[in-house]
Amino acid sequence: MVGLLAALSASAAGGMRIALPLLLIGLLRIDKLWSEIPLLSGVPPQVAITILVSWSLLELFASKTFVGQRVLQIVQIIFSPIVGAIMGITIAQLSSIEEIIAHPWMLWIIGIVGGLLALVLQLVQAGWFYRL
Image (cartoon, rainbow, N blue to C red; front, side):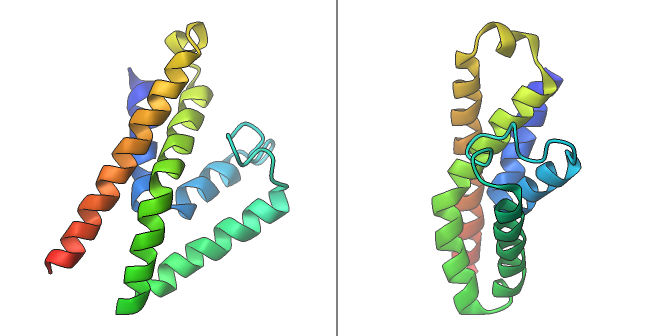
């Protein structure tokens, strides 16, 4: 149960910021970096670090202007379900939950639920921005 909650909370973090949670997961696993993360395992580590650090800095500095916030929200709404699914699947694999090892199709369910959770959080964040 703790592994499932960890996967969903990582998906929620991916819904709030896109690049920073992926960057932290990769950097915390110094020995393997992104070798076990779906979609990022095919990218060389130098390229992945460059892209994720650049996007994290862009998220930080673009959020200071009104136009930057709008552009960032559009991009984040598009990519937050993908990042949420990646984060959920990665944390579920790394926590080695017994049920997931026995039934690999549960990874798909965790990925879908994590992606939807990240999308809902991003939509709430965008709605709050437009409300103000």
